Length: 235
Ligand code: CA
Image (cartoon, rainbow, N blue to C red):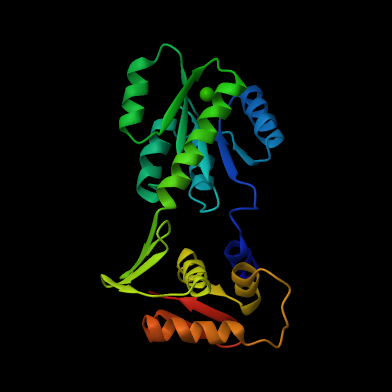
């Protein structure tokens, strides 16, 4: 249990493959899409019915969902409606029959980000997958807000309760790392690896020192020390 939590916290978005979930009951189509996406370097999971698909889509590591509409157990539309409550941010691309134009409009209104009509070429689907992932990354890469701490990732500025706080580059990166993993315990090794990015001297107390800087410049209670495990941002 503990190790799976740490693995999730360890995930580095820049290097780990993006996870795509295909919810499609037609095995031929599912495997065609799966093979294509894997060849492009994505990690792929497949669900053959709506219920399983919904359960898998709720997992935080899924970066994008490709959702067929005609599914056993739960329809694609039902999956989409539920998913919009549990995971409003995950991009969803709907697969729909060519003549179901009304359905398409309804689905976009229900929160699908895009749709592809069957039959489709892999190139078409792939282009849409990349476009949705790019759009999501751009939207999430401008500002990061947790509680009363706000990071402007473009301008590299920090505000606490609306007041600007001056941070060095390293302090900024450390704070960003904490904020991207709010509530998760990050070990010294993980923080060194992400923020300093080199093999470090295990005896070094540089993380502790920089956590101290952040506490002084922001607020002491933003970062908790978890004895024997590391630090946790609780902002
Ligand atoms: Ca189907």
